[in-house]
Amino acid sequence: MIIRAVLATSALLISSSTAAINPALVGTWSSKSAKVMTGPGFYNPVNDSFIEPSHAGISYSFTADGFYESAYYRAVSNPTSPNCPKALLQFQHGTFTENANGSLSLNPIAVDGRQQLSDPCKNSKNSQYSRYHQPELMMKYEAKIDDYKKINRLDLYQFDGTPIQPLYQAYSPPMMLPTVTMNPTDKADAAKETGAKVKRGEGLAESLLEPLNKDAKHIKRHLSGTMDAKSPSGMADSVWWAGVGMTLLGGAAYLL
Image (cartoon, helix red, strand yellow):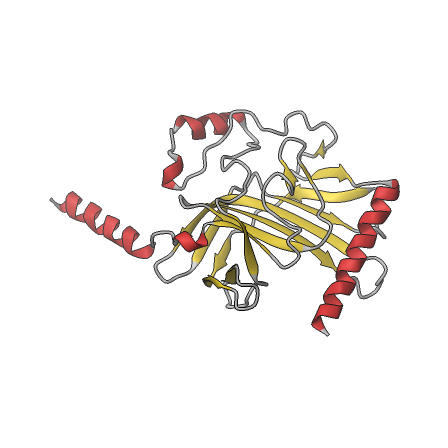
């Protein structure tokens, strides 16, 4: 009887700390430029590489059964060298929970997250490419119809209440990469995860037995877990950095 009471109390606490996922949250959401979208157009898990968008922006996708994906492309200004803006790309995916207090807990798959930082003045031939893992807590969110655009809009607020730039619905159902662990670092761990027979509907990510990036030979892997990836060269490189510069100028003009 005591054991049953403890289990019942635990189940009650768990159910009271989470809430059912709001259908209005489901879909792919993108910032004003609409050039950054989650899915295969931003990150290629087979080549283990990013596809740089033409403009900076962010995108989030949420499913009805507890999976999410995020794509960030930031143009970072350089006060000491205005002609050398940096570019930062970040990809994460995993599971999320809508908590009873209205917040969202985003728990990314640690081994799948990627980050690429490019600095043309320090190193024009190579980008700093590494794994990236950063859980997120959105203090609250608002899904509504935008007063001006008359389309679905999502406002996300970071853990401290700071708002993220408005996101607009681009796809429903969402456009996303596979929700499983795409590039496990250890076959034994991958087999253990898949052997657990985790159901997708439970909001837990499964794992592939072999990483999708196993043949991505153009990436140099280090024992530390970091990776080097060659950045675009020649005319393509010049066009890309020109685009980053225009993005920064456009953002400054928008703020004026």
